[in-house]
Image (cartoon, rainbow, N blue to C red; front, top):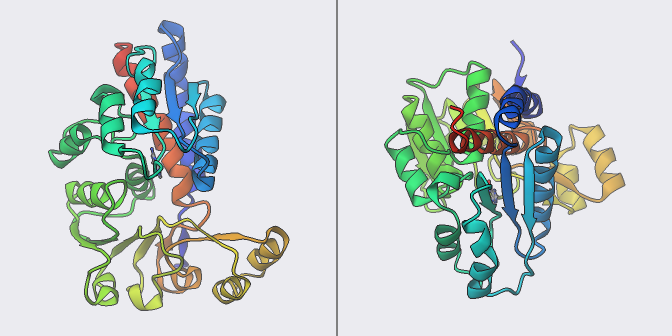
Length: 308
Ligand code: GUN
């Protein structure tokens, strides 16, 4: 059997389609779900992510409130600006786009502004604690999307060896716990792991979430593994793009036109040649994050409106 390209875009559309009757029911009974999005400063990648999140809200009829303070705001000023949001009970979920500028105390802002009942990102200590205990709470969107995709593609997890490369609070750690709850044997690798390639080659399911372009190669992939590439790295270096996409003339043509292209944390050609299934970049994990954000918003709205 040939390699399966795990189509995150299609799964994302499926998930969002399934939310439509739930949103319609909320509108009929009470009000549309509402999501507040806070984007501090003008981080270029964050601007794109936030634009896509707001577009998804609009397409689904989720009310959105956008707050965009300047990048030089202080922690105290930000807390003051967001205080009305923190007490606005008509908002179901509050998302503060990460990363925040360096001068901001991110922990202080998120704990003061986002109470657990509106933690749509699942980043709070409360939600993460509930995840450790495998109790219901909003789950971090990227790992939750990956789990949903594995489920919908009927990729077996129980008893498999999953290797998660990356230990961030947003992806690596929560994903490792989710895989563990589905009875995978889980290894977490990170920047200090010795013999990374050897660890990765033991993976039936390999998750790359390190934020380094094409850092994992054919040497890191067991033949027939399922590879999930969470990376989204923008490349402008012509020589590097020509090397990484020598096998993909369409990508090279698009690069020549646009001057940049996206690559994940795994060499694209290595995934195609070694994996039994893999997520492409773009079109793999990215769209799933947005779908799960919408799902979390609807779920919180249902709780707030007493509909579930
Ligand atoms: N930055 C990168 N991914 C995310 C995410 O899922 N949520 C937030 N709030 N910030 C991010």
